[in-house]
Image (cartoon, rainbow, N blue to C red):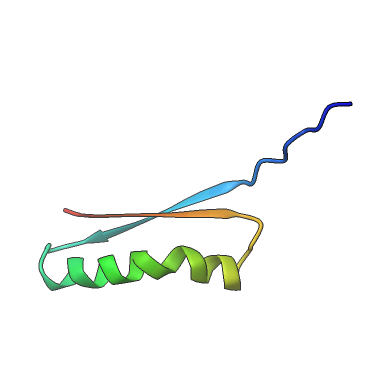
Length: 55
């Protein structure tokens, strides 16, 4: 008998800070906890990935 592994869907959220000074610090703090909060409040069955950058 084979077991089929159910893969969780993934949603990638991007945060961009402009300019890279204080806004980048805020984005870094937000990115650190956003995936967990999205899982708690939106959908725990989704793998939430948060990527950050500046530009």
